[in-house]
Amino acid sequence: MIMKKNIIYFVCTFFMLSSCSQDYIDLMPTSTVTVDYYYQTDKDFSDALIGVFASIRSQYNYFYCFGDLRADDSWIEFPKANYKTYFDLFTLNSADGLMNTTWQNYYQAIFRANTLLEKIESLDAATIPNKNRYIGEARFNRALCYFDLLRIFGPVPAVTKVLTVNEAYQTPREPVENLYNNIIIPDLQAAESSLPASYSGNDVGKPTIGAAKALLGRVYLTMGDFQKAESKLMEVTSLGYQLEGNFNDVFDYDNKRNSEYIYNIEYVEGNTTNGSMFTNEFAPASATFFTFFGLNGGGGESNNPTPGIMNLFEEHDIRKELTVGIHGGFYDNDGVFFPILATTNQTYTKKYLIPTPAGNASKADWKHIRYADVLLMLAEAMNENGKTEQAIPYLNMIRRRAGVSEYPTTLSKTEMFDAIELERRLELSFEGHRWFDLKRWGKAYEVMKGNGMAEFMTVFPIPLRQIQLINDPAILPQNPGY
Image (tube, rainbow, N blue to C red; front, top):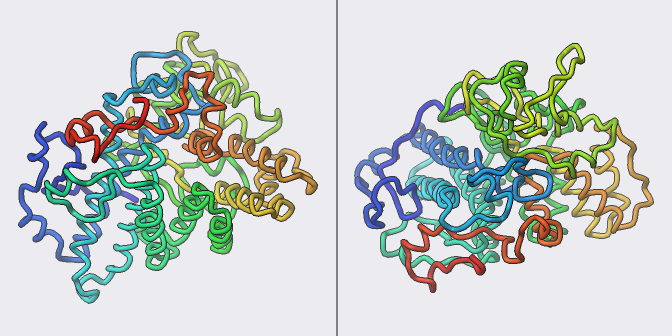
């Protein structure tokens, strides 16, 4: 979704970016009259949704820290005194700046969605022709934010309207079950009923009914409601999506919306505000590497493939070279090997590796939901529902494309689960899934305790800044252990 312009908002709440003042009260609206004036035309609401998405897009530049770097397929090969290393080594604390930024980004998007929903509710569809669609987009994005927030922090404040300062001070953390049942699921169900199957023109890239169904299927799977997960994900298989014939084509950013695309967090090339950081962040600090691959800027040396994930791939797995690169260097077009400096990371993923005009201004998107993920989630739900034999063909669709041997139809339920876990790692690594997979399987501590994880670290700390602002543990307590 190309961002045509930045939307300036004149309303803040406690949950918005606090670049204003250290005082909580200074985050309140400065001009509600201006806001009331703004929300009048169809275009006003279309532009407002760009503002909602802008906050989410900003946050997803760092989503790999939560979804990948925290788990066992990714690491900081050469630790440094920065937040990325703290994520990797489980030394993160509540005062870390990224924790507060994460909280602010998501609640800023929620605030903007809530504002839009309040302003559009009383308006006639004759005035706002796309009213239902805008409501669906806003609720999809709000559900996405709350789903991420609860997976990261656990219980969080449930805010579904624009708050007064007193209401903000008194809004407690909401149980996870309530967040699912009162916000996330109803929002996605509403999005299902109001979003289109596809878009045209400048609207291409916005959430569709397929995105809503796929995200709802992921929600049900995370909740352990396998019957509903199977039913919802099966609906996605009837919407016309299919696996790309060539795995590498999934990561062709000149053809972002291929047959496997369901929903991306999209970025714009050449713009350090709207561009993505992934290409630079995941590259080694090597001038030779940058020259050959046409990169500009510097290498972030982060999200490096671990020896563990590199050794999982079979030799002839088509996914291997693009997913985990070549250890210690790269081959040019003539097959000549070029080593990279021993002082930088020796591994790298090429899923986001494309020529860039400037540092952190890549057009490499974050693949929030793609069809391969849907097939693997569906196979998992079916297996949990005792339909192992019926689930195996969905798993084998992934294997067949990878050019490796398919699984036999005689797998037991346990063997099938192990196969699904392996295939999710091989297919989806560095796309933000592994840590959250380990969490929902109850395996995070078992797998990561040797890397410094304590048992309480299945959730991240509530940002210290937010704890200090509320200053009432009965309303906003810190997560145990932090």
